Image 1 (cartoon, rainbow over the protein chains, first blue to last red):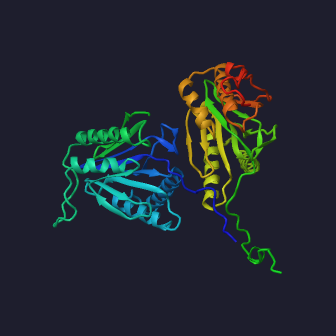
Image 2 (tube, chains in turn green, blue):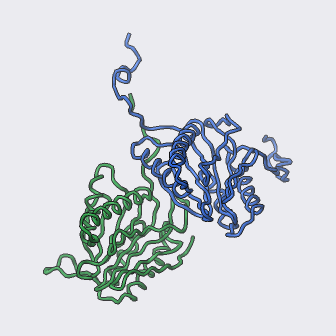
Image 3 (cartoon, chains in turn brown, orange):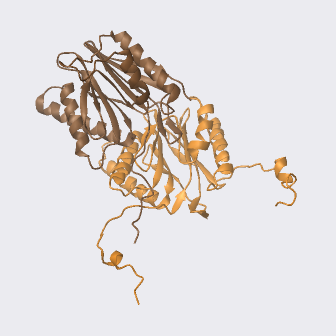
Length: 223
Length: 242
């Protein structure tokens, strides 16, 4: 007897690209606002960035229903943390929580490709990059999603990142100024938009620093 | 004589295991737009059974509480079950008797959770839903798919509507459409669907929801044009064909 085969998939890829860059005293987190399915665009104005805590912002691409569910789980866990500890979660703490949450569904994963950006307890920019099942690493910058393969080599070149094999380990946090980093991010997205069909419409950029949070939007090609 | 019956399926106790599904009776596209005073939605009244158009008076646009309107495509029996869930939701909302009532944003969120949770259990409700409404002057229009993908926008469509209607809406939609302009725009899209979607039927309803309330029109048909020159003598370029 042949086994029945599913004629539907519980997953879909709703596309999009996310980038984050860590600076000495700031962090830039950005994502495009296009949501697609197959070769169709569902909407041009959808935010992939979620504020998890005062100093932690997560940008996620992949399967939107899983991304939203993940954002809800983390927000809710953060609220409980605040009730229990009477303070906000630090970015590195949130990073570990995200990893654990993803691995919890190791055998029916959240199809979400995440970049977590924020300020650590010293006020320095920190970026954490993840795969769908929770393996993560603190880095100086990262790109995830459909345009990641186009953006990462460009960032490697422009930010002149030190080799991860060096000893003692050299920090990849960029010495660029905040304005230069934001400009670099805009360049990343306009380039990725040219060649990646799932990236475009507009890019939402969040800049986190000692003074607080700032939000910028830049229009991208809509084709 | 070896029995051709498969004993394993009779003896195995898979119990309640409901897994993969196929849709049986389905509705086709639903389209929705925001306009000056609220939301307009359109859907035809067809219920297809595979390639047969089996039912021609299926109401796919329904009221939900005081402030919302739902339109569904996909499996009709699953839509009927969703209406039962929503009925219970609104009932409990009313029973609180606290002057509060669920708005379209809340109902949309509820539907998203229902669809996503069924998808997690590998037992989806085979529908694409559009939820629209107005509460306290704020217009809301959202969409949910059978696997829980959801978003809101000024114009949404399900199924074929995404390919045939949305491009028209994206080109011609404006923030300040009047009711008449909105209806004309939706009819333009529905006509396009009628020509090109084989599961569309020429009997549709348009629903309007504003702060004041909801009205769903009586069913009516669209005028179509088939008098193209190329249709008059179709074999003129290929003698002998039919």
